[in-house]
Image (cartoon, rainbow, N blue to C red; front, side, top):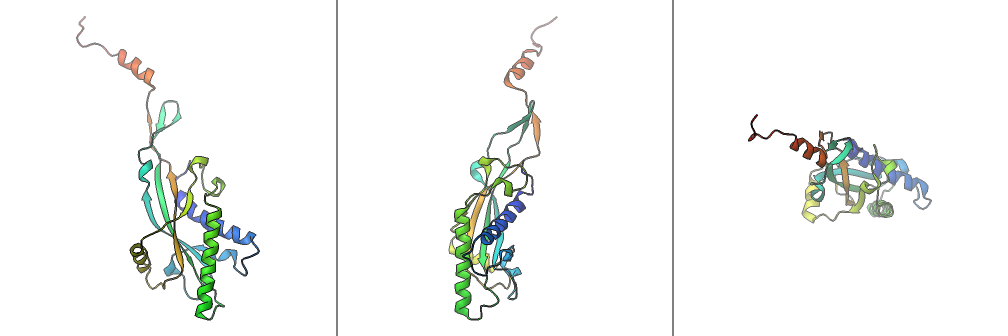
Length: 206
């Protein structure tokens, strides 16, 4: 069962995924695995040690799974279908403090962005053990590049007060399910028929 903490759980899982894969590799130079963070661009200053930032910028309901069936929990109890969500993230690469020249800074950021994209491409589904609660194997969120229109990207970056544009890419992660807490007792078909047959016939007297 996945509770309301699953959104934060997915965000934290993305950070851990990047950090762990960077830590395992020997071809990423001096990139600190701990320099990956869940942070918006306007929260990263020039002296920050963050090299890869992940920011959740949009949450929407998944329309294709909106009318899912209820699930039986115990006896005649049925739980309402879960809330299915699509999450969108902005992944941004930041230069290192030792990159003095603008060209070097830009190249460093592009390499970092390529590294992040390679990791997400090679790990396109979040493992169940990386998420809070019990997530079924057929309900694991998938990670995919989201091709946002240029006006959406422009509006997104303009919402970050004082943040300078940096090499970045948007991702769609989902579907993500939040289980409902609502349950209802619904008798089985044969039980409902029995109850109906037991009702008195108002046309009969005596």
